[in-house]
Length: 122
Image 1 (cartoon, rainbow, N blue to C red):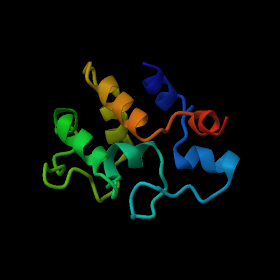
Image 2: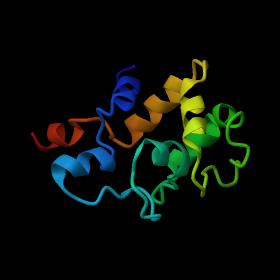
Image 3: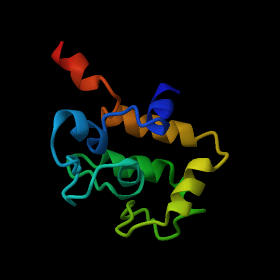
Image 4: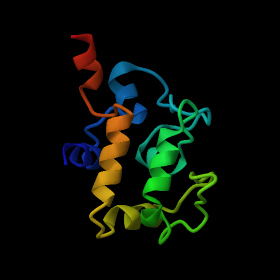
């Protein structure tokens, strides 16, 4: 639940947020698309070039995406195009108990929780 709360409150270490206090451009360090690593990018667009774990999570939780993103395929579980903000809102507002598991898994994997970098250096 902590991961979901951190995600919703922007209390995480996604590049869009951490670049403010650490410096940098906010671009995703997990994939090669050079897009800003924000909540929408991590949920829908990141291609995770290193081990494809983010893509495998989208496959695992594909049932969460199909009501909102029919173009998401199992072969390429990411969306190369922008989504309307209403779609993102609807996705995050769905009443499915597995949504919090997906968000928690993706935030835990990517070490996107605020304070994670500080804990590793101490």
